[in-house]
Image 1 (cartoon, helix red, strand yellow):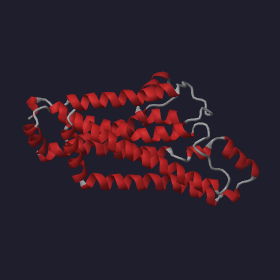
Image 2 (cartoon, rainbow, N blue to C red):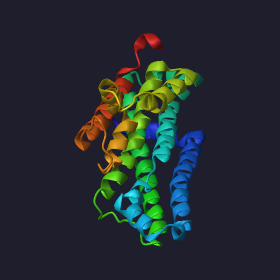
Image 3 (cartoon, helix red, strand yellow):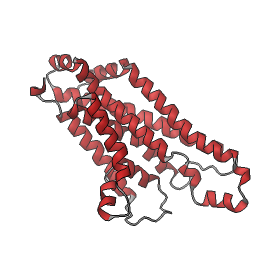
Image 4 (tube, rainbow, N blue to C red):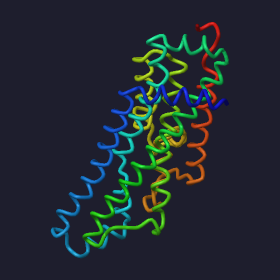
Length: 263
Protein backbone atom coordinates (compact mmCIF):
# COMPACT_ATOMS: atom_id res chain seq x y z
CA UNK A 1 0.00 0.00 0.00
CA UNK A 2 1.49 3.31 -1.12
CA UNK A 3 1.96 6.08 1.42
CA UNK A 4 0.91 8.72 -1.12
CA UNK A 5 -2.47 7.04 -1.50
CA UNK A 6 -2.93 6.96 2.26
CA UNK A 7 -2.01 10.64 2.44
CA UNK A 8 -4.48 11.45 -0.34
CA UNK A 9 -7.29 9.56 1.39
CA UNK A 10 -6.50 11.32 4.65
CA UNK A 11 -6.79 14.69 2.89
CA UNK A 12 -10.17 13.60 1.48
CA UNK A 13 -11.41 12.56 4.90
CA UNK A 14 -10.25 15.82 6.47
CA UNK A 15 -12.10 17.78 3.79
CA UNK A 16 -15.43 16.13 4.63
CA UNK A 17 -16.85 18.59 7.15
CA UNK A 18 -19.94 16.45 7.68
CA UNK A 19 -17.76 13.55 8.84
CA UNK A 20 -16.06 15.60 11.53
CA UNK A 21 -19.35 17.13 12.63
CA UNK A 22 -20.74 13.61 12.91
CA UNK A 23 -17.71 12.51 14.92
CA UNK A 24 -18.08 15.45 17.30
CA UNK A 25 -21.84 15.02 17.71
CA UNK A 26 -21.45 11.29 18.33
CA UNK A 27 -18.71 11.81 20.89
CA UNK A 28 -20.76 14.39 22.77
CA UNK A 29 -23.89 12.22 22.68
CA UNK A 30 -22.12 9.07 23.88
CA UNK A 31 -20.14 10.77 26.64
CA UNK A 32 -23.16 12.81 27.76
CA UNK A 33 -25.35 9.71 27.85
CA UNK A 34 -22.89 7.79 30.02
CA UNK A 35 -22.02 10.73 32.26
CA UNK A 36 -25.68 11.67 32.64
CA UNK A 37 -26.54 8.23 33.95
CA UNK A 38 -23.62 8.37 36.38
CA UNK A 39 -24.68 11.84 37.54
CA UNK A 40 -28.24 10.65 38.08
CA UNK A 41 -26.90 7.86 40.28
CA UNK A 42 -24.73 10.35 42.16
CA UNK A 43 -27.67 12.71 42.71
CA UNK A 44 -29.94 10.01 44.13
CA UNK A 45 -27.26 8.12 46.04
CA UNK A 46 -28.38 9.38 49.43
CA UNK A 47 -31.86 7.98 48.79
CA UNK A 48 -30.46 4.45 48.77
CA UNK A 49 -30.11 2.48 51.97
CA UNK A 50 -26.82 0.88 52.96
CA UNK A 51 -27.78 -2.55 51.64
CA UNK A 52 -28.78 -1.11 48.27
CA UNK A 53 -25.48 0.77 47.98
CA UNK A 54 -23.49 -2.36 48.76
CA UNK A 55 -25.47 -4.34 46.21
CA UNK A 56 -24.92 -1.61 43.61
CA UNK A 57 -21.16 -1.92 43.96
CA UNK A 58 -21.13 -5.69 44.43
CA UNK A 59 -23.10 -6.26 41.23
CA UNK A 60 -20.55 -4.32 39.18
CA UNK A 61 -22.98 -1.62 38.10
CA UNK A 62 -20.39 1.20 38.32
CA UNK A 63 -18.34 -0.53 35.62
CA UNK A 64 -21.45 -1.05 33.50
CA UNK A 65 -22.04 2.70 33.64
CA UNK A 66 -18.61 3.35 32.14
CA UNK A 67 -20.12 2.57 28.73
CA UNK A 68 -23.81 1.76 28.59
CA UNK A 69 -25.61 -0.35 26.02
CA UNK A 70 -27.54 2.60 24.59
CA UNK A 71 -24.35 4.62 24.22
CA UNK A 72 -22.68 1.71 22.44
CA UNK A 73 -25.62 1.42 20.05
CA UNK A 74 -25.47 5.14 19.27
CA UNK A 75 -21.76 4.91 18.53
CA UNK A 76 -22.14 1.76 16.45
CA UNK A 77 -24.85 3.32 14.28
CA UNK A 78 -22.98 6.60 13.86
CA UNK A 79 -19.65 4.99 12.99
CA UNK A 80 -21.25 2.63 10.50
CA UNK A 81 -22.85 5.64 8.83
CA UNK A 82 -19.57 7.56 8.83
CA UNK A 83 -17.72 4.62 7.32
CA UNK A 84 -20.35 4.34 4.62
CA UNK A 85 -20.26 8.06 3.79
CA UNK A 86 -16.52 7.86 3.09
CA UNK A 87 -17.19 5.77 -0.02
CA UNK A 88 -20.82 6.36 -1.04
CA UNK A 89 -20.17 10.08 -0.97
CA UNK A 90 -17.64 9.62 -3.76
CA UNK A 91 -19.97 7.38 -5.73
CA UNK A 92 -22.85 9.85 -5.44
CA UNK A 93 -20.75 12.83 -6.56
CA UNK A 94 -18.83 10.91 -9.20
CA UNK A 95 -15.42 11.80 -7.76
CA UNK A 96 -14.66 8.09 -7.49
CA UNK A 97 -14.36 8.06 -11.28
CA UNK A 98 -11.67 10.71 -11.13
CA UNK A 99 -9.85 8.82 -8.40
CA UNK A 100 -9.85 5.54 -10.32
CA UNK A 101 -8.87 7.32 -13.54
CA UNK A 102 -5.84 8.81 -11.78
CA UNK A 103 -5.01 5.58 -9.94
CA UNK A 104 -6.10 2.50 -11.93
CA UNK A 105 -5.00 0.25 -9.06
CA UNK A 106 -8.44 0.29 -7.47
CA UNK A 107 -7.63 -2.17 -4.74
CA UNK A 108 -4.73 -0.01 -3.61
CA UNK A 109 -7.05 2.98 -3.41
CA UNK A 110 -9.58 1.03 -1.36
CA UNK A 111 -6.84 -0.37 0.87
CA UNK A 112 -5.76 3.21 1.59
CA UNK A 113 -9.37 4.12 2.46
CA UNK A 114 -9.53 1.12 4.78
CA UNK A 115 -6.32 2.19 6.52
CA UNK A 116 -7.48 5.78 7.01
CA UNK A 117 -10.93 4.79 8.26
CA UNK A 118 -9.44 2.21 10.63
CA UNK A 119 -7.00 4.66 12.20
CA UNK A 120 -9.53 7.50 12.47
CA UNK A 121 -12.22 5.28 13.99
CA UNK A 122 -9.80 3.60 16.40
CA UNK A 123 -8.54 6.93 17.69
CA UNK A 124 -12.12 8.15 18.00
CA UNK A 125 -13.20 5.03 19.85
CA UNK A 126 -10.25 5.17 22.21
CA UNK A 127 -10.89 8.81 23.08
CA UNK A 128 -14.62 8.35 23.63
CA UNK A 129 -14.23 5.15 25.65
CA UNK A 130 -11.41 6.62 27.72
CA UNK A 131 -13.19 9.89 28.45
CA UNK A 132 -16.45 8.09 29.25
CA UNK A 133 -14.70 5.76 31.69
CA UNK A 134 -12.77 8.56 33.39
CA UNK A 135 -15.76 10.89 33.67
CA UNK A 136 -18.30 8.34 34.87
CA UNK A 137 -15.98 6.84 37.45
CA UNK A 138 -14.91 10.27 38.69
CA UNK A 139 -18.57 11.12 39.29
CA UNK A 140 -19.30 7.80 41.00
CA UNK A 141 -16.11 7.98 43.04
CA UNK A 142 -17.51 11.04 44.81
CA UNK A 143 -19.90 8.55 46.40
CA UNK A 144 -17.19 5.96 46.92
CA UNK A 145 -18.59 3.75 44.17
CA UNK A 146 -16.14 4.39 41.32
CA UNK A 147 -13.74 1.83 39.88
CA UNK A 148 -10.27 2.20 38.36
CA UNK A 149 -8.58 0.62 35.37
CA UNK A 150 -6.88 -1.72 37.79
CA UNK A 151 -10.17 -3.31 38.81
CA UNK A 152 -11.11 -6.65 37.21
CA UNK A 153 -12.75 -6.24 33.82
CA UNK A 154 -12.19 -2.49 33.56
CA UNK A 155 -9.56 -2.60 30.81
CA UNK A 156 -11.66 -5.06 28.83
CA UNK A 157 -14.70 -2.76 28.99
CA UNK A 158 -12.69 0.22 27.73
CA UNK A 159 -10.93 -1.79 25.03
CA UNK A 160 -14.11 -3.48 23.82
CA UNK A 161 -15.92 -0.13 23.66
CA UNK A 162 -13.03 1.54 21.86
CA UNK A 163 -12.70 -1.21 19.23
CA UNK A 164 -16.43 -1.29 18.54
CA UNK A 165 -15.92 1.98 16.65
CA UNK A 166 -13.48 0.73 13.96
CA UNK A 167 -15.34 -2.56 13.57
CA UNK A 168 -18.59 -0.74 12.79
CA UNK A 169 -16.88 1.91 10.65
CA UNK A 170 -15.26 -0.80 8.52
CA UNK A 171 -18.58 -2.61 8.23
CA UNK A 172 -20.17 0.61 6.97
CA UNK A 173 -17.32 1.16 4.51
CA UNK A 174 -17.70 -2.38 3.17
CA UNK A 175 -21.46 -2.01 2.78
CA UNK A 176 -20.95 1.29 0.99
CA UNK A 177 -18.42 -0.25 -1.37
CA UNK A 178 -20.87 -3.00 -2.30
CA UNK A 179 -24.23 -1.18 -2.28
CA UNK A 180 -22.94 2.22 -3.48
CA UNK A 181 -26.22 4.07 -2.93
CA UNK A 182 -26.58 6.32 0.10
CA UNK A 183 -30.13 5.47 1.16
CA UNK A 184 -29.74 1.73 0.61
CA UNK A 185 -26.40 1.66 2.40
CA UNK A 186 -27.71 3.55 5.42
CA UNK A 187 -30.78 1.30 5.61
CA UNK A 188 -28.63 -1.81 5.44
CA UNK A 189 -26.33 -0.43 8.13
CA UNK A 190 -29.26 0.20 10.46
CA UNK A 191 -30.54 -3.33 9.88
CA UNK A 192 -27.15 -4.90 10.58
CA UNK A 193 -26.19 -2.74 13.56
CA UNK A 194 -29.57 -2.12 15.21
CA UNK A 195 -32.35 -4.38 13.97
CA UNK A 196 -30.60 -7.76 13.89
CA UNK A 197 -29.22 -7.55 17.47
CA UNK A 198 -32.75 -6.81 18.66
CA UNK A 199 -34.32 -9.51 16.49
CA UNK A 200 -32.20 -12.36 17.83
CA UNK A 201 -32.85 -13.50 21.39
CA UNK A 202 -30.87 -15.61 23.84
CA UNK A 203 -33.85 -17.82 24.62
CA UNK A 204 -33.45 -20.15 21.63
CA UNK A 205 -30.22 -21.86 20.62
CA UNK A 206 -30.00 -20.92 16.94
CA UNK A 207 -31.21 -17.40 17.62
CA UNK A 208 -28.56 -17.02 20.31
CA UNK A 209 -25.83 -18.39 18.02
CA UNK A 210 -26.85 -16.03 15.22
CA UNK A 211 -26.92 -13.11 17.63
CA UNK A 212 -23.46 -13.97 18.90
CA UNK A 213 -22.12 -13.41 15.39
CA UNK A 214 -22.97 -9.69 15.49
CA UNK A 215 -20.55 -6.95 16.66
CA UNK A 216 -22.98 -5.36 19.11
CA UNK A 217 -23.72 -8.70 20.75
CA UNK A 218 -19.98 -9.35 20.92
CA UNK A 219 -19.58 -6.02 22.71
CA UNK A 220 -22.31 -6.99 25.17
CA UNK A 221 -20.44 -10.20 25.96
CA UNK A 222 -17.12 -8.40 26.43
CA UNK A 223 -18.52 -5.86 28.89
CA UNK A 224 -20.46 -8.53 30.78
CA UNK A 225 -18.92 -9.62 34.06
CA UNK A 226 -20.57 -13.02 33.85
CA UNK A 227 -22.81 -12.51 36.88
CA UNK A 228 -26.01 -12.69 34.86
CA UNK A 229 -26.64 -16.28 33.69
CA UNK A 230 -27.75 -16.84 30.09
CA UNK A 231 -29.29 -19.97 28.54
CA UNK A 232 -26.51 -20.28 25.95
CA UNK A 233 -23.35 -18.63 27.29
CA UNK A 234 -20.23 -18.00 25.24
CA UNK A 235 -16.69 -16.93 25.96
CA UNK A 236 -14.98 -13.56 25.81
CA UNK A 237 -12.49 -15.13 23.42
CA UNK A 238 -15.35 -15.92 21.07
CA UNK A 239 -16.51 -12.31 21.24
CA UNK A 240 -13.02 -11.02 20.41
CA UNK A 241 -12.99 -13.44 17.48
CA UNK A 242 -16.25 -11.94 16.18
CA UNK A 243 -14.63 -8.50 16.30
CA UNK A 244 -11.66 -9.78 14.31
CA UNK A 245 -13.75 -11.67 11.76
CA UNK A 246 -15.99 -8.68 11.08
CA UNK A 247 -13.02 -6.35 10.72
CA UNK A 248 -11.12 -8.68 8.39
CA UNK A 249 -14.19 -9.54 6.32
CA UNK A 250 -15.11 -5.86 6.00
CA UNK A 251 -11.58 -4.98 4.88
CA UNK A 252 -11.58 -7.74 2.28
CA UNK A 253 -15.03 -6.77 1.00
CA UNK A 254 -14.15 -3.08 0.79
CA UNK A 255 -10.90 -3.71 -1.06
CA UNK A 256 -12.39 -6.25 -3.48
CA UNK A 257 -15.59 -4.27 -4.05
CA UNK A 258 -14.70 -1.96 -6.96
CA UNK A 259 -14.67 -3.62 -10.39
CA UNK A 260 -13.71 -2.30 -13.76
CA UNK A 261 -17.22 -2.82 -15.18
CA UNK A 262 -18.69 -0.47 -12.56
CA UNK A 263 -16.96 2.58 -13.94
